[in-house]
Image 1 (cartoon, rainbow, N blue to C red):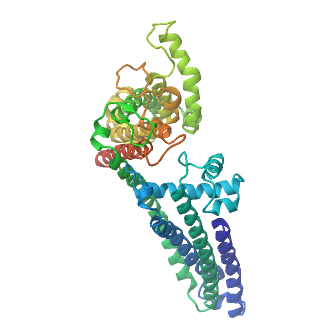
Image 2 (image 1 turned 120 degrees about the horizontal axis):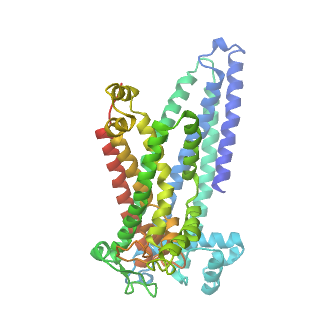
Length: 490
């Protein structure tokens, strides 16, 4: 049974329990609410909670545990001879899972019939072709051990899902009956419901932490696999980026320094555009603009933050790049041979970052008390002197934090770089050269016929982990600056 249908069944049982619980408690109180400890809605909510929450918790735990249990069972089916010298059992198991998912996709798409997908003696070439036509991410050729393990993986998953569906539905019905039994006038239903709501809020507050933990773990495991196949010293200190997909463990150079340099260089150009424009716009809107102008200009400026980054990338490719070539290219100064360059991506990314800097800075400047302005004016200072010597120093910690948050946004940008900066990984100081960034190479390494048993594909996870650590450090530093130097006003 699909997970969505199972969820809808549990939800229907909970909704039915809600109305049955209200009706039952009204009968137990002879229709007089004054005889009830709680409102009828609390009794209905008690039934709905007991019908839905235990069942959904079991379903969630089952969905998390089943892949690990099935993977452990299938892992023992993979013979050692099927694991290449430069691979590992974990990488082969990842290939098995992708093949199992691909078999489901191929059966749904009609590129492979259900009998062939379950047949251990199926033709490997036909299975491989069916998976590729369905868009499954697999290696160039499926091997017999991988296919057999994938078929066992599918069968165990299907059996586990069927058992889970039966357990969850039975548990939901039993929970509803439990809640209906408690739907009596003297039952403290309000306390139960409010306790459940409190735990719901605690769970919601924990999602951010659990999400961060999940992101880190998903990157760490594949990063460790990469460093088992490729030396960490060559990755972090290498100055050449030249991946080769000619074979597993080929003569690829996977040095990250050119990518990091391109990332920081383009981000620096973007910040050089966004910081002065965004900060001056914030000063004007908060100190000089009238209420009418501010109410019109501020939302208009923030529209820039809602434009998709792919649109900025097209703007860089079709407008800014050719414009810069006409000024600095062969017909101009002759120093910019193509439209894709650091300066192209940096300028467009800087425009994208303007609302981040201006909106945050504007809010921070407006938080400075009016009494500080009045005191400065009372001592004879002009408006510009008040801004320079009173307002900006008071708002500086928050402005620095806004700039650092904009920097982390620039470092993580992808589409503008792909379309505006080119794809060359090089160490150069020339802003008119084409360069690339970490995020762009993550996309290119995982696009196409990626063999996840090779360092050329696994390097994307190492790049992602590196980028995650850098942006996390910037965000933590920004929060530290804001909290340490933030002014507290009464």
